[in-house]
Image (cartoon, rainbow, N blue to C red; front, top):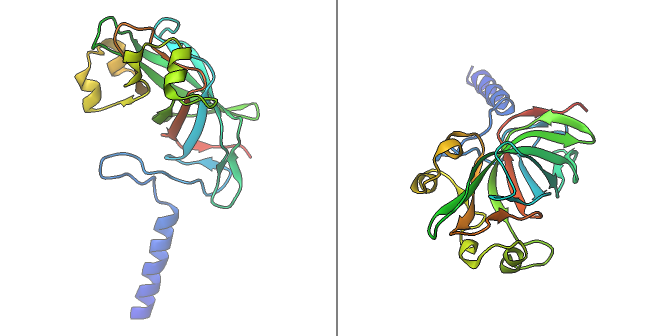
Length: 212
């Protein structure tokens, strides 16, 4: 009888493992998740993408569309390619706050809504978990200089604003309430931009079924 019960317990555990939802950390964050096959992008899948256009407080407006190109393929546990290099992530600017004074925080909010793979679009939501402004062998300072960003903006440019950090700056309006990830564009009276070529680490927040 004990052997039978143990066997039933093992089967139940295996079934639970196969159907488990995305893992959530103690802090409420979704843990990284690797796709099991090429037919599904689970919540928690990490993508590396490069911004295709420069976004900023002067040239951009809330509602503007933008794209980022996937720079590394996402590979499933069985070795199949789920999201190929060159896939396009589409997004929208959902919030924008210009900095007018020294010490004032400029910021932008980006929301992703679709993923284009081989010409086919899929609904897709993701958050930005990290940024890297080093592009084409340039240092961060060189990138900022070429983008026309003042030195005072460099220290905080690209930082992800969330939780306590977001509540400490006077962002107000649509930036605080809109969907998406808030990213610092620096501080001070400067032309604040997120340069084209900036590398974004994205984590999917929506399960996506792919037609394969």
